[in-house]
Length: 325
Image: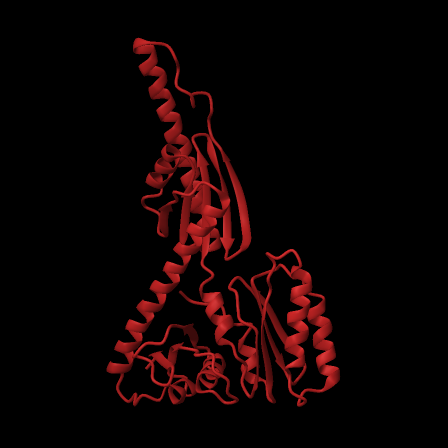
């Protein structure tokens, strides 16, 4: 459940102001490059005159060099000190421009936490193709080539037929075991939380059975097409992310209710270094000095983890916390 935030932590130490832009990257259109260019230019025109023209021209050059199809959306966080954080995300976004004392990092953090490392196994009776993903990015691939001599059942009758059938069954099971072992090793390597197995019913069932003791979630996929597999895996990883949030909210309720000396001010607690995990809900509203953004900046400064969740009653002013002490 822990989320890598180390590259965001230096932003908390920046002085001055921040410019945050959310840009759609509609790569599925035939004129996607032109649309992306329009989104960039429209966003930059919406920036106030507080930003030096030379600074914005340099930022425009940076954005102009980007591909139009590296993700469904783009998040740009630019500091008045001159440095920028630019990241494509898998989630679509509505175009927006924000300026203020703190960066708008909740959309980026929320997208990252929905990126669940997983392994897709496309199996048949002779082996499998393995692909490890982190969101839409391919982390690693592998191929398992099993025995094929007795894959097909023999056609002789009587005892001969039964003998060939049993040898075929044994070969299938051995191949499934090899596939399962390779999938488990790959999942461990990329810290995957899900192994999704696709393929013909028999092969898929045998691989899932061989993965019964795997420490991560193992799911049999009914879809056969690449698009269908992608849709099923997207739903499964979203379920994992949602379960993480539910469990963390429950933990936060208990932590804030039972920790002696906590009076309900999350910002004070996180600034004092008392927060292990900050939990926030971002309503997306404009504002220069939003409480949520201040909490996130303080959490980054003090080494706390951060989780973005839907709005729930446990959050006071859009923030809650699992406390260290």
